[in-house]
Amino acid sequence: MRAYAKVNIFLKITGTRGDFHEIASRFVLLKDIYDELEFVYSPSGKFRITGCEEIPQEQNLITRAYEALLKYTKNKKIEEFFKDHAVKVVKNIPAGGGLGGGSSDAAAFLKMANDSLSLDLDTQELSRIALQIGSDVPFFVYSYKSANVRGIGEEIEPFEDNIPDIEIFTMDFGCNTAKVYKNFRSKFFKIANKKSVNRLFETDSEKILKTLKPIQANDLYQSAADLCVQLKKHIDDRYLSGSGSTLFKPAKKEEK
View 1 (cartoon, one colour):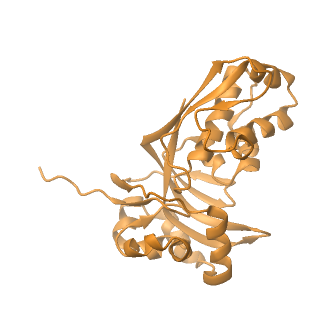
View 2 (cartoon, rainbow, N blue to C red):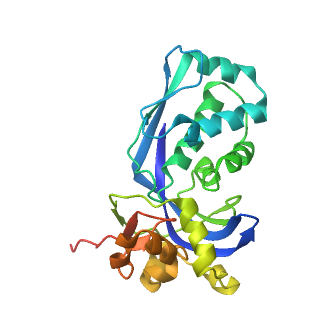
């Protein structure tokens, strides 16, 4: 299964919920950037992930997806299956880039396990499990090309969008999501205007990228650039996805 990346066309902070931040965002799938997941026969007697050894297995969101699925279903055939099968991952989405690679991998794992083991979980059930893993994971469970996302990731509404071709700029460093949010709360905290957010939810992605400056589109940009200073030189001409570090902009249309 392909686990696609995403970009946030806009990302606004609308409140807090304990240590979490509530967001309003437009998520768009990137169909040309993806990881690949496969279940391969590999008897080891325990759950195992191969192909992304740079991420400690206990920190990998696929592991959290496996544990959350076990806890939710209490189905022993999941545990038995993964004693004889490993999760093979081909990583193409850069880690720490704000493209949702780890979250997409976790969602792909849930859907693959559901299908392969005939668990008969519907999409809403998978989404509830996904939210326990991370706030971006439910979006990838639904696989919408474009969606408006609210709350801590649990409110997902598909959006009929006009999506421009997007040019991606992958940086040679990553931004730590938790640190970017913590820095935002301590130094840049501001609640987005509700009416402005509602207008963004009604506006297609192409128009948003034509009318909003990068710093206006993503409330986390200042915080990310404060921590990852290499981003500062691009703050006026390239948009930030998520908490960074990946930048993007609409691709120039070729003249016919």
